[in-house]
Length: 417
Image 1 (cartoon, rainbow, N blue to C red):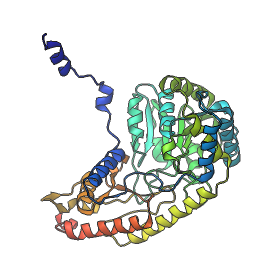
Image 2 (image 1 turned 90 degrees about the vertical axis):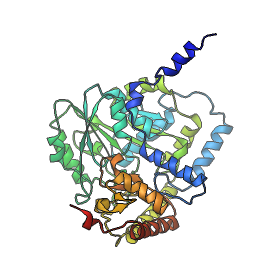
Image 3 (image 1 turned 180 degrees about the vertical axis):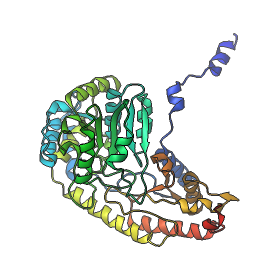
Image 4 (image 1 turned 120 degrees about the vertical axis):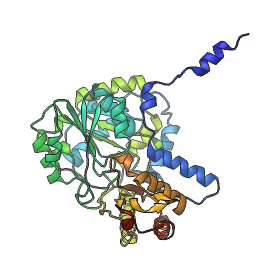
């Protein structure tokens, strides 16, 4: 038989342009590299992934076990069990004084799916999304998949990694359809205060065609004050989507459960999309989430206290680290230093040059895995997760300090033009 058909099949390109143009998640890519080096016998301290190192609280585990015994093993409604959606309604009322209906709540396989549901449901090709930087690594890829355009608005360490209402307004065009942000912010840890959200809202009320998508996955990991949301601002409740989930505040990363609370039209569109993608998310995880949202918060508060202690330790350990400009984060569990001071330093015969190469340097010389700020829209920075033990934090920073001292061949300021 002729081999020509097989040869032709081998020459064809089966993947779509959509996939070819899509960037791989740099956090997941660095985590994979770290695992590979660990498997080769290297002792890597992995500060690349934002995953709490705590176990899921016992009462949530027990609820999942009970759900298995009670045979919660059938398909659920696409948007989730009614009592689980009602628990979110109560939460919105108690925490934000925001009255919503159960039909506005949709549960998905992680907050990541909740986000892509919303973007695919709302955005049309050519629409623009205002994206304050630094932003979570997957936002730009999701916007790209929705065939829209990200309008990145940079910020600096000096500004606390926040943008003003004036900066936002200057970027608005007739094609602006959405504002997307997180608070507390991944990667910077910046937390938007009520006065700052109110200033944004005053400006946004002049542009009623812009939908606000507020990623609040880190709401329970904040180190001062009460959580606040754009949905609380006058005139904004009807045009705000809140995305949240169980991963961070309840140490349920592997359970893959997130939710969106949206205007009814958007929520219905998300249900329609999800019905074709994944249908409902896991029935057992939903019963566990009901226990999390309805039960005691003691474990969550203890985790937040531990993250605060780790934040304080990391800030103290890096206080006199040369070329390390890092605002104190008010939430989440990351450090996001500007390390551009070192870009002129020589490593392996040439300047470090950029944050991507700095992460390579730290992985090779310090055996510490970090993520380039380029992935988050801030190319002068790197991100370090401190969702790990205090010993790992101390050891990682000691390794970084030693690598700076021993492996960079000259003072970076001397190498600048």
